[in-house]
Length: 612
Ligand code: F6R
Figure 1: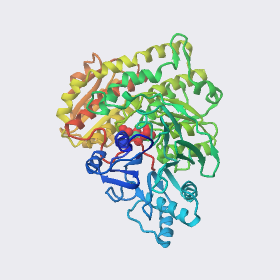
Figure 2: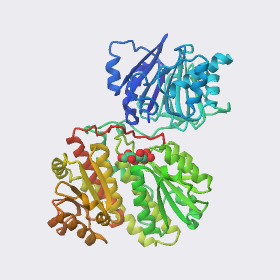
Figure 3: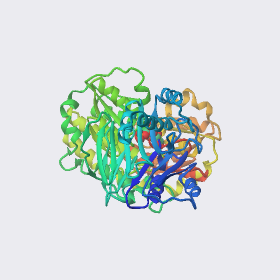
Figure 4: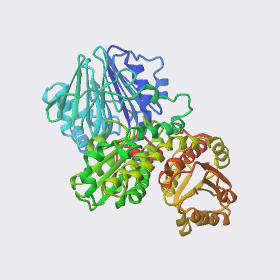
């Protein structure tokens, strides 16, 4: 939902901004723009990708040591040049970039129009920069103070950067509800960005702004204060991310790289968190919240999209293994439906980005009602872990492809650990059971590696199905959330309509869709309900549907019925989603590539959904 990057210091700003915007493009790619201060304020902005902006600035004056850039995911105002950021104040002296939504922009705009302001765009953002100049002119205060006072009038979410022609050694950043990190480089240089990816190449020293804080960078010094004028000491931390993690590393797309990274990302997510010899855990969330876990009545899992699917796997795991009742809720529904929730509930909020606005709002609601919150996130320092009482990071490494892949398997890995941890605390799992479970979990990275070997076969299957208009994904038990996830992957990156269904539900409606043109992907691995799934496959075959079955290595029964079978290594049922999801990710990827789709940046989507 919009990416922002800014630089002040001895280097040329423009190349840093362009490179940074390319790294942030996963957040939105409707338009891109830069503002470069060099005596004058040069603003270049363009509908489309960062590469379009680069093209448009060819031969133009881009020399500057203070500048900022923006890549947009449109909310207010259609994607076009005029609505692209940066926006400028009435005089044209102050420029702003913004990620978020100014909710009361309508009223503010009306007041400003009455005071003679003229607006050039349809955006909420332009209102804020006019307001800042208006405050400055009416009160005579310095830019710092004008920004602070203007922000007091704003309702909504923002991460903004402000620069002014009249203050050429100053850069101001502020955040509320949208992420912002400040990088502290060499020789008094500073960076501001939506996440650390544009910064990592230059410095590992960063500070994450808290909600309601403003960073003032002037003459090589950083100071932070709140909107209410309280001075803060910035907490400087060292980034653990490395540059390779955010580059394609020889793969054609980030999504493919991330699919192939899963043996490692699952390993990293599990590493050091359990001891297979003793059957013990090393997770702070389990240790510090042992009493709470022992006595809780219910777990509510909230998330959106793929994270919600991981939550569904979590429901099966917690109920199966720890015997705790679980509800899984779309964060966007939960927050608006007056849920019954109290201090005996534990809410697990799952989010790759840690910034999803609906999930964040669901946490706030649950906190108000006294629930304990565990955050399960991938992006270190993001808003959801900060808003949670405890939790765990998934350690999947940066996920840049818009379609979530390695984050899903990392989330499911941690949920599995928690389910066992909760089970032990509540007397539902013995050390022996834990040792066995851990031993099996340790084999998962290798099994995922083996599952990835199906790629050549998947490429063949993808060739056959690339032109279809619809697809059905079926699964039962642990296979059901995997079917949902497989369908989501296909629709979001290939734009083929796909539905995930519990296999037995098919006969209550979707079976009407089946004919010889309908590919039906079935999770038909060996387990408790294998025979039942076979019956469902027969129902599809009787109606001439085309079956693509994910089966356990060595399976012959399903092979005899299905049009295509993809084998995965045998695994306990509770760990199967980690393996069976792999061929589905590959299938959606290769179908999308065959259709010429932009896999890493599918239309209309953004990686981090910071608006509701
Ligand atoms: C699907 C996808 C989205 C996200 C959803 C939640 O591939 O990427 O459905 O899963 O927007 O995002 P996070 O996990 O960042 O809260």
